[in-house]
Image (cartoon, helix red, strand yellow):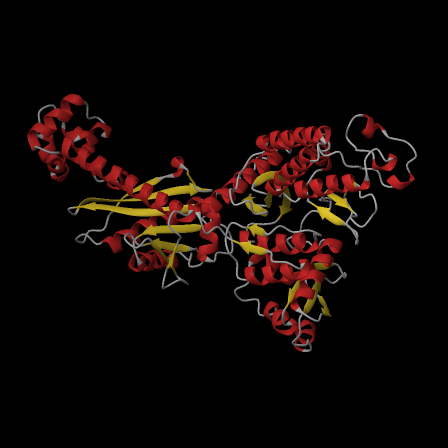
Length: 605
C-alpha cells in the first residue's frame, strides 16, 4: 500500500479541507469535502479522472488535511487558503482583483461616507463597484443633489471645507445644517445606494409636502430641485429589470486556456455597475465548475449581498450555496438560473459583455486565441468529454434509388465550418444499398487516409443516424486502432445523441447552442453528400466526366456519346469497341479503356 493510500485510509469521515502537495512541499491543489476520507480516496482510483486531475496526481507526494465543524466552514476555509496560496490546479480568482466599496458608520453622531477597498467590522457597506475611478465619478454625481460629508472626522473640523463651498457637503461640522436634517440626507443617500429609488423619491415628495405645509418654502424648493435632479439621473440610468429586485447577473466566456466571468450589478432594476474576472483555466474545467468556484471565492467574502444571484445554468449544490449565503448574511439570498425569457435576456447580456471583455483582453495582449464556441462547451459537458471538441468531423451518406452512393466528411473547428477540409467519397460497396456498410466504408477510408498522411485526429466524430450507425463507426475505428476516439451519433427524429458510454442517449436542450451546433454539422454533412451525389449523377448521364480523359477532345467525346448513348455504356465498352468509333484510333481507345479503370477515376465515381 502506498503512503498516500495509508494517509487516506486513516482520515476521518468528517468535513474538512485537504491540500495535495508535491515532493517539495509545494501546494498543488486545495479542496473541501463533506467526508475527507471518501473524497481523498476517490483521487487514488485514477480511473475515469479528468486529464487535469490525473496530471496533478502524478505530482502529488503528500497530503495535509484540516477537520472543520461543518461543510460550510470547510468552504470558507478553502476559499481563504486558495486566495492565500494560489495553488496551480485550483480555479482561482486573480489576487490583484480588489473591490471598491462605499462604507458608512451609521452609529456616529455625524455619519460620513467613504470609498474603501478594505472590509472591517462595524460599518455598513454598499457595493461592490469594481474600479475606484468609476465609483468616484458616481459619488461625485450623487453628492451634487445629496450633499453628504466624505471627511473622516467631521467632529474635529473647525471650518468649512471646499466641498461645502461647492455645494457637495451640507456642512454638519460647522452647524450649517442641523444634525436632524443631515440625518435625512444620510437616509436619502442610503436609499439611493441600496437601489430603493422609488422609496427615495416618495420620501423626498413627503418631505417637500411637509415643508410646504409648514410654510418652509425655501426648504420645499430645495427638496423639489433635489427630486428633479435625482429623477434626471435615474432617467439616464439603463433600466434592465422591471421587477426592481437587487440582483447580480453572471455571464461567462471561454478560450482554450482562460475564462472570463462578467458581473452585472443591478439595483432597483437599474444597471449601476459591472465588473469582470479573468481566470486562467483549461477547457477540461466546465463552466459549472468555474461558476461554483467563483461563487465560493467571491460571495462568501463580501460584507453585503444582493437578493438574487442569477447564473447561466443550474448546478447541483446551488440550493446549498443559497442557504449558506442566507445564513451568513442574515436574510434570504437566492442563487437561481433563468426560468423566464426576461431572466434569460439578462444572462445573455452578461454573456455578451463577457465575450467583448475577453476579446478586448486578447486584442490588447496581441493574442490570436479564439473564444470557445458555446455549442462546443455544451457538447463537452453533455457528453462528459475530458476535452472540449474543438475539432469535430461529421459524416453522412447520400443513396438515392441505389445509384451513385456517396459519403461526406465535413470539418468544424471551434463550432464553425472549415470548408477547405471537407472530403467527399464515392462509396465502393457492391452489395444492394446498405447504409451501415456504406458508413463503415467512409469512416474507415477517411481515417485510414488521416493516419497515412499524419494529419491530426478530431476531438469528436459525429455520424448521422442512431445506435446502428454509431456501432459501425466504432467498429471501423477499432479496425484502425482508434478505439479511443470519441464518437457520437445523432438520431434524426428524436434529436438524441448516443455515444459508447451514453447508450440510452442524451437530449440537448431545445434551442441550446449545443443542439444548434450538432444540427448544423448534420445538415452540412447531408448537404455536402447530396451535392456530390447529384454531381456524379449529372456527370454520368451527360458524360461530362470524359472531359478529364486524356486524348479525348470535344469531337471524340461527342462521337463516343452518340455511338454508345451514355457515359455508362462508354465505360462498359471494350477497347476494340471504342476503337470503332469515328475519330478514335487504336492507341486512343486503349488509353481511354485503361483510364476508365484507374483508381482515381473509380474514386470519382
